[in-house]
Image 1 (cartoon, rainbow, N blue to C red):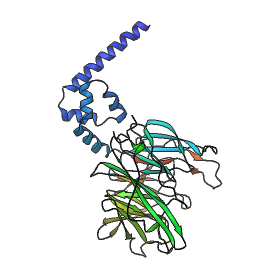
Image 2 (image 1 turned 135 degrees about the vertical axis):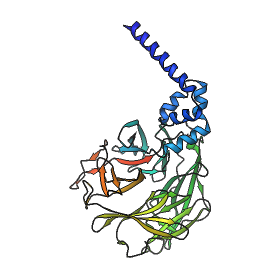
Image 3 (image 1 turned 90 degrees about the vertical axis):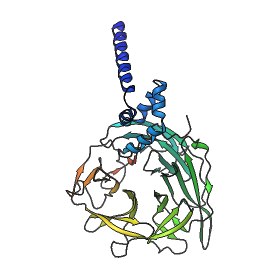
Image 4 (image 1 turned 120 degrees about the vertical axis):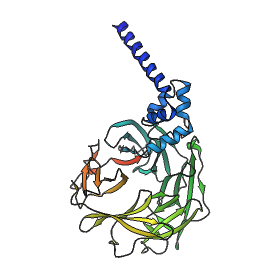
Length: 395
């Protein structure tokens, strides 16, 4: 029996070698096209096959081609956290990557510090997780997971963070706002930035405090679009009624400026609004309009502050929508459809031509059955990423 199994294995090995030799004889462009359709974890294995394959897959031209193609095929990272350990103030989180159809790729368990963990997507290969001044970077494609140097401590609650990829320099940037001091006249808020290039030892990269202080109290997560971080819920130090601003941090100039929201009267100023990036533009989302619908304003001209109401989508046609409990978050514009997360067990896809939603395949979500709301709340959090070879320098 073992002899038969050995013979079968030898036949398979010879067959695989012949197939690979055949691929080796193909023109380079065709080889690039074939390999760019595979996942990073598979390509990392192929690197070990021979020197030829290692050189081919490590070729900078191929890597650029691969990253360009992977940007057209976004994937999902799902995070489920467990009950934290009261003694260690740590918890185990389960991370699972998959394609938009729910086919699972990599899975891993990580122990991290904190109670409620925020996810900061970059729109590219890495995901940032953070709690207060504790930051972690994760590459779902390679499963490389690194704890960063802790950010500055704040005397009071932290005021937000942001994470993003700068295309022009091929670097990731982590931005962290923190309270340097507090007085009767307000807060002195500092801003620190951590920069990471491919192959850097991420665990030892230092934070750098920029010269200009942050002029506003900021909560929530900052969004990077075209080399500028944007934050909502910006409250003036000494004027808590000034809610109609978006705070912008220009990474090149390292200074802050403010951007006015769309014209008052075009939305309910009491609504909760948030920022997303769609088609390369900063967008403001209001999904508490009456009647139930989602309005999306797009900043078409950041220099002259030109907002355009780009989309208005009715929610009464969204299967499972509840105007009390459902918060709909646009994730990306993909294949002429808007992919949205509506806190259900699957994603939904809005077709602009047909003005209708379709439900995606069910995902393996977890729900909080212990909460006291009338409807169970979803524990699973989602983030989108693209396959990337970006190294965090831990291997």
